[in-house]
Amino acid sequence: MKLGLAENLSHVKKEIHQSALMAGRDPDSVKLVAVSKNQPAAKINELMNAGQLDFGENRCQELEEKYAQVSGVNWHFVGHLQTNKAKAVVELCDLIHSVDSLKLIRKIHSTAQEIDKVQKILLEVNVGGEGTKSGFAPRELPPLLDTLKQLPFSNVRITGLMAMAPLVEPEKTRPVFRKLFSIAQELHLRELSMGMTNDYKTAIGEGATIVRIGTAVFSGT
Image 1 (tube, rainbow, N blue to C red):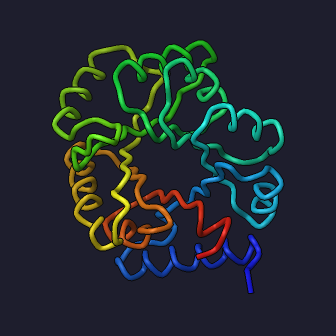
Image 2 (cartoon, rainbow, N blue to C red):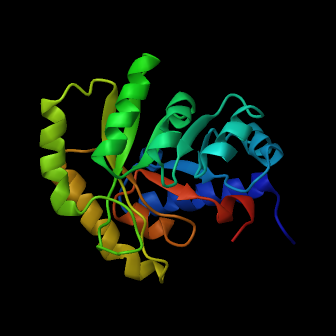
C-alpha cells in the first residue's frame, strides 16, 4: 500500500534520526530540505501541515509560482542559478545552495543590498572534477574566500558548501562526501548540503548538515 505524504515524511525523518545517531551525531544537527520541484503547491501545503518547513526548488519560475501559493515555509534554491534570475531568488529564498561563480556572488550581493537583506549562500563544489557538473574546483576556494574578504560583500554570508554526488551506489559516494567535509573543516565553514534520496544516509554519516530529499518524501522509497 502506498503511504501518504505525512507517512513518507515521518519515515524519512526517522531514517535521518537513526543515521545521525549511528554516526555519533545529534539528530537535530541535520536539516531536511524537501525538494519540491515538479510537485503541486497542494502537496507542499500538506507537508507543511505535517511539520515540514524547508522546501527546495531548482527553477526560478516554479519557485515564484509556488511562493504565491504557499506561505509560512522557508524556501531554498538548489538548482543551477543564472545571474539574470538571481533577483527573484534573492527576494524569495532563505538559502541559495548552488552558488558556482564569483560573477553570481556579485549579482546576489548587489541584489540583496538593494532590498537590505543579508543573503545566506552555499558554495557549490565540483569535488570530483566532473565535466557535467557545475561548481568551484576545491583548489579555487581558498583564493576565492580571500578575495571576498577584501571586498565589501556585507550582504552575502557564506555559510557552507554544497555538492552533487554521482548517481551511483550510495557507498561509492562516500569519498565525495568525505572530501567535502574535509574542505569545509579546512575553510572553517559549518553547513554541508549533500545527500539526496539515494545516498542521504551515507552523507549524514560523513557530516551532512542539510540533506535535499525529493523522491523519498513525495513518492516514498
